[in-house]
Image (cartoon, rainbow, N blue to C red; front, top):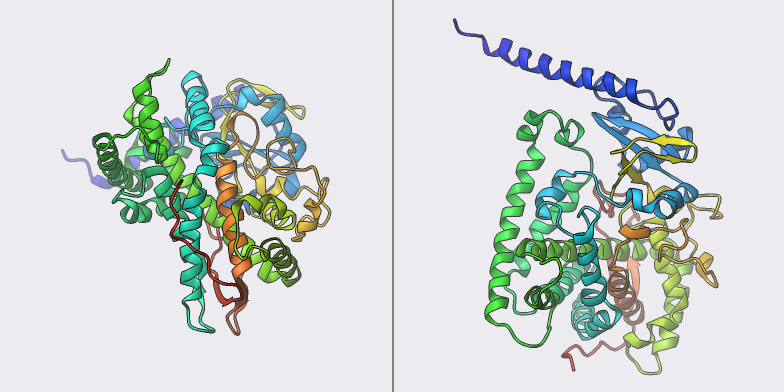
Length: 501
């Protein structure tokens, strides 16, 4: 006797539903009554409905206004704790940092970063510490970042020339042009100038941050293996990963063939470290996972900060004028922008800081995982809870910032508050053990080109254009619409036929 397909589907679904509800009931009975407050949960889905219709960091911000800076949510089977104030962020990232130093399972990260073997997503432990040490001392040291100064001048100087070649009054797609330039810079610094994969890698990499945002049903219900098999996100990430992996294999093979004693790019450095040997050997997959970190982390975040900086200055002409006057006062004597004088641009640096305060590169920092049960602000945080720090909200904490929703670079002038993880009211790069290790590289790729653009051009909006400041759904919360600007040349163009000494 044949079983009707519909009956079979209903049976499978009801069985899955039974086990999920049973698991939830048992978990609720065993949970501590002193859990963080949060909105009322619906059966099965928990609080998923509370996040529908808004950007995730906005939805969590609005909920935190009602339920407090330590808020509990249930997203499917996953227990989530959302942190929304500087004081609580300090407890997570400093007081109890070791307990929250690992990452929860994320489908995108597991696939795209080779089983979470990267610096960004790797589990906390000896292997991760070794990778981070390599990154800090070898890949992204101050000396290494400075060594790419000629490349920044080459790439961004060429971009200045492209802007200048526009006919008078015509607009450029600033968002697209800068994203393309910053990707060229990062990919040449990481993979080398000779790599043929630059143009083909970019479309694949640009898709990853969009796929990384939001929630996937397989992550929300990890005990239901069928959901993992059904996940469209998983299938798309696997397809992207296979294409990216093939390109990495090609470029690594070429580097091994053309091996020299010079470390021309960051892949050369990684291959040399691999060859020299380490206490815990690194594999080819480790190397490729670090390449993903560099290419994704360096290009998407720097582009987002730059475009928001230009947007905020166009929205606040007083700020634009003040930053431009400072840049031209410093560089007019030589007639060109010299990277060594960037430290003199105090107001421009304040503009970048204020941009990152209002538009942090990752509004929801990469999530953390509680290793053991822990008490935060008097609330019990269960083991294996997913911790989300809403940097967008923390950076606007009214306890520490006057007019927190207003763009005021002056607040950083003569201020000791910095982004290095010592002041928890300003955490665009996170803090503690899992703080972003690429701060020096990222800032150099924003401050220098910003000085170039302000020195050589006056910038205007297109006629009858409204400056839309809405954000796009994605891990980096970039602008919803591309920024179109009209550049007007005011200073002689830079020389860009430079090579490293």
